[in-house]
Length: 385
Image 1 (tube, rainbow, N blue to C red):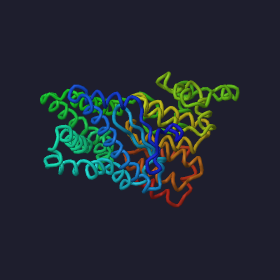
Image 2: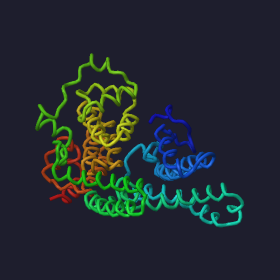
Image 3: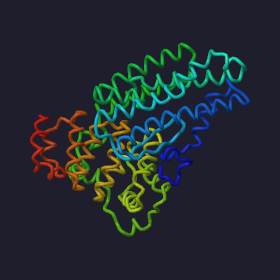
Image 4: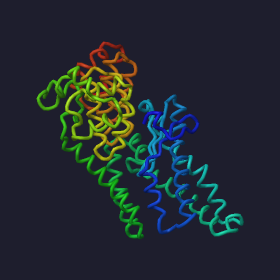
């Protein structure tokens, strides 16, 4: 989401509100609220989710990142300008959103809801109760250990990706049963969706469909199976005909599961300075978004746009739906090729923290050649059998 597409800026943070956000907000309140109370409900949802996402955003700012916020049908998402550089940062950013909503809106409304001021009129009573309910119940639910919720991200940092997804399947399944039994069909469907997403991710790890899912880099995937995994070479004439507007670039990676058929769209995005907005759009496009963004990352790497490839890998790591071992490893290889060895070592260590366990990969990966000459390499190599 580039700044020029933002609808407003709050404290210097660009914020965009997609039309689907308004549709879901009205849907959630329709029937239970009408007239001005329905309008008030939509405003409460807007402000509450904004406060939540700005909690994430301002914490990212404290870590010298440049965040932006998108509100859409599934609530909101805040994306930083780089991946988290430490576990402490990841946990702090994840917990800042729910805490901001609880402290700034939820608890104050809870203290007011049964007081004389709220009881003066029916409308006031309903509005105060809605503010308390949205910001307390939704914040607590968001801290459940279910990916991609904030609690799930915290669990992934503490336990690792795979154990966190196992916990998420169990918790989401129990949550779905509870919601359906209590008549909350909407909550039950959301919990069931999260459970299915995490189960599918576990199954994909067990039976990888793509050649890069085992931890190999873009360069290895191309070298081992060029006929199947490597796109055809870039032709300058092709690149010249690829529009650099975000809609066209996004479509180039969504028309097929593996993304664009060649590197032209990736090169065009890099030349136009639109790689991060493009990757963000892809990640927000639905269940296929992570795979499309991973294709963009690979194409950038193939094309020699290593700094941009590293940035997309970091976004994929933060998103988490495609796992975290591979994006962290890809960030390390791209940063090494870009000449940023110190930062590449950080991401390689992070990949090992997340579960990278192939010493042969570290020994043979060409993109890590510069790192293997560093004094810090033996300590890193010793971490992997």
